[in-house]
Length: 314
Image (cartoon, rainbow, N blue to C red; front, top):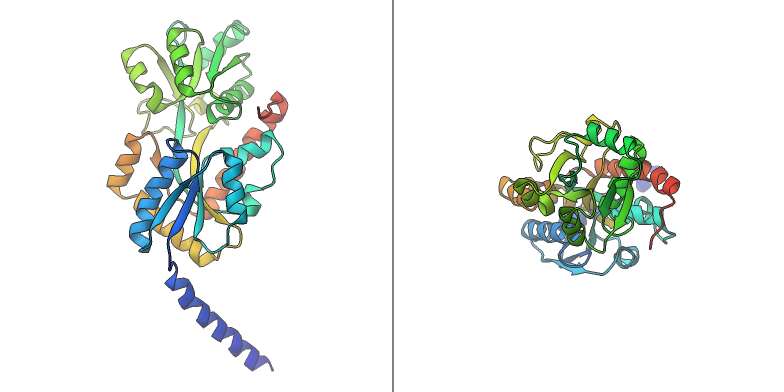
């Protein structure tokens, strides 16, 4: 009986291969955040590339909030036709409040499409020019410095809390509904420092209204030429916004591999890479395992910080 069973298995495998090769046969959609954010921008760039390479229209489906997007994904068929483009909030939200999903159990990371480090900037009235000087000043003047951030759990909020914990500096948070308001108050001197996107503060650094000290990525970034890393002064520090592409759990490996390959090929073409750099993000397109490892590392860095600081979703 073994020979017929093996033969049958081979026939099944042979039959499955053409089905995978012929995918997709109808349009795909990428679920993402509200229009205008980094996740939406990345989704639209990826959708454009996949539409061209897969021969099927890939549409962007904007939804309000991480939970809503995760619910859609958790209910989607594992056939590669419904994908998700989202940033760090997909795995930081479960650290802030109970949720129904586990990002690495319920979703398959396809590729880290793009990433964007923040820039540590200060108001010129703060008498420091380096991260080491900032740390020394903050310790010598306890609670004299306030940092601006977006909503609780936002990337720039957690970047500041990670810095506060690793550097051991007593700085206090002033929260804002949006980064635009935060930058305005930083320029006005109502707050003294911020972990801001390069695009939001570049003109103000150039004009001298703000002072850039360092970049939050582990390695120097082409988005912030000449700036050192915070990690050079605060070992172990890394806080980068990651924009990734996901599929529902149990999506066939052949589909995941094809999506990663086609997305990476498009993102890494010089014209698209330059376009992304101009928008303040770096093209990546790495393998699923590398993206999953980056998620685990970020969870490990932030979980203790969030717990020790008693940070909860608003």
